Every structure is written in structure tokens, then in C-alpha cells.
Image (cartoon, rainbow, N blue to C red):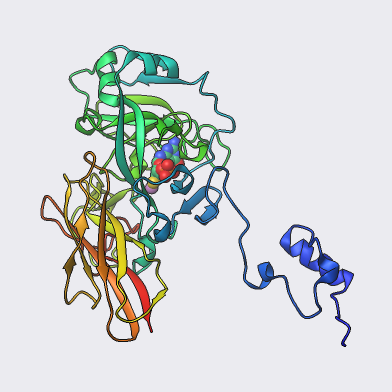
Length: 407
Ligand SMILES: Nc1nc2c(c(=O)[nH]1)N[C@H]1C(S)=C(S)[C@@H](COP(=O)(O)O)O[C@H]1N2
Ligand SMILES: [Mo]
């Protein structure tokens, strides 16, 4: 019998330093084998309160997306909800000492509300609302757009509980010239410069006064996770999620379009008129995104699934829109030549995503793609190929595609 040959102590020490952790049974590791976490580049980096299956795109600021197959739940669990930070979250925010200021040139009587006053003084409502980052799908644009290379997972739908922003704004009073609101959060700029905001965006006053616009402290019946804005945030369905301010400390009522950080230039703005890919667009020709497009995503099976011929394969997913409700979701297995209509659940309220489901079977062995396409109440539908290129790669609502191998 051959005696096993083991790795030397020096080699094990080297592995340990690459892994950032001691290799506990290192002395038994056969010579010639490398820890798989080195050869497969396994990522042990997990975010506090978040599922290890999230794809971390950046850790400073934290940006993490949810793989499509982990978006199969009717409501996205808190630990699976994507994270998009522009700065550094507050360290240990205290709900007990939290206060929300409402002020601004178009505010009649500026006021501060503690979290408990908010909860006591206004109607408490819960709504299922989809949040999607304006840059979701950015990775597909060509020429490429700078920024987090989101694939499909900067989206989720949760049940948010809080008070209507409208009720709070009515309490402090709007001056006649109020046209916009802006938010400020307790997160800090990456540079450490406290005079700079990581982001301070907002919405037109009509959107702020919408029944569905919330100041929320709870997500799926629990406190907000720290990374999703604990203890208080704004929720605006149908808008780019960048308007849903996290760690909310202050709302300003403005007599002009809010001019906070990331309201101008190419941030969350697209050419007012379509441009050819790669075009440089002047600031004055850019318009603020005020509507997220109709979209869908296949959450089962996961891309790369292998199945047998003539087996019924269940296919499931989610669809959402800023306009009313989704009226139809179709699936194709032949690159969009033929489409099959799926069964579709109702939405619980406006801006909630809806679940679709169908079954497919495949007669011939080989490679297939399954594509999904949603249509909303306005008759808007998803393009099969990339929609209009824009400098920052926003609003990609091309059909979601997954790959299947049949044998
Ligand atoms: N204070 C604050 N609010 C913020 C952000 C931020 O960096 N700071 N990011 C915005 C952006 S760009 C998005 S897409 C959403 C992401 O919300 P989530 O991290 O809860 O998924 O929060 C928005 N609200
Ligand atoms: Mo975003």
C-alpha cells in the first residue's frame, strides 16, 4: 500500500493565508490537491442579514443582486432582497431615537416626527410593492455603461408597512408652489466628507401625494434590514428604486425640481429622445426617469437546468409594471417564433408583482432557451432585444432568457 503524501506545512500556511482562515485539517490534505475554495474561487463573503446566495457586485458601497432562481417566492424574503447603496449605511441607527424632519421652502409648518409619533398619528397601511433599480439589466448594454453591472436581480417585491407620505405632507401643509419632494438619509459619502450626500433624490409632488407612496418601517412583517434602510425609508412603486430613500431622516418640500445629489447629469436620467448607441448626450437633453417599464423574470427552472425529452417542465416567474396591472405573460421555447400564454395571478395592489406559471415539454434533445414576455394594461410589452441605449444603461426590459439542455 502506498503511503499517502501530504502537503508541507509551508504549503498549508500559504493556503491559509490565501483563504484568510486556517485550514483546520491541513496536515491531512493529500499532496497535489488544492483547497477547492482556491481553485473554484469560492466567495465566503456574506452581507449581514443577507442570504449567501446573493451576488455581491461591490462591497464599498455594498451592491448585491438576487439570482433569478432565488426570486421564486410570492414576496421576496428580506434576506434575499437586493441591496443598492451609494454610500456607507449608518453604523448603529437607533429606532428609539430616530426622527424624521419635514421642511423645505414649500413646507407650511416644518415639523419633526419620532418613529413612535408617526406610528400613532397616522393610518398604518401595508402594500406589496416592487422595487427595481433603474440600472437593473445594465450589463447587457453595448457600448457598455459604467456602474454596477446588474444582470437581472436588482429587483424584489416585499410587503411594506408604514404610513402614507400624503398624510404626513398634509399634516405639515404644502404651499401652493410645491412641485417636488427630496429626501436625505443618514448614510454617509464614501469619501468621509460629511458635507457631501451619497444620494438625495425625490419625486414630483403628484407622486408624493399618491395613495401608494409610503414612509415605511417594516418589510414583510419585520423591521427593515439595516442594508435596506433601517429604521425608516420611502417606498415609491413604479419609479426607479433610487427615489425610495433609505435611512430616511429628512424630507424637503421643494418649489422646484429637487436638485440633490444624483438628480442631474446622467444620473437616473435618459435622453429625452432616443439616441444611437454610444452617443454623447448634453445635460439639457436628458430627462429624469419617472416610470419603470413592463418586465418579467423566470424564477424556475434556473438557467442551466437539464431535463429529459417529453417531460412536463413547470416554468414559473414574476411580472411587474408601473402602469396598472400585468394582463398577459407569454413564454417561448423557439427564440420568440411562437408564444404560449401562461396562467397569471392577480396583483394584490398596484405595483405588486404578479406570478405566472405554465408547463413546457421538449421533443428533441438539444439546447433550448426559454423566453418570457409580459404585457401590461397600457398594452406595453417587452422587447425581445435590447431597448433604447442610454449613457448609463437604464431601463433594460428585454425579455428574460434562460438556457435549458434536453437529453
Ligand atoms: N439613503 C439612501 N437611499 C437610497 C440609496 C442610497 O444609497 N442611500 N440607494 C437608492 C437606490 S439607487 C436604490 S436602487 C434603492 C435600493 O433599495 P434596496 O437597497 O433596499 O434594495 O435604494 C435607493 N435609496
Ligand atoms: Mo438604483
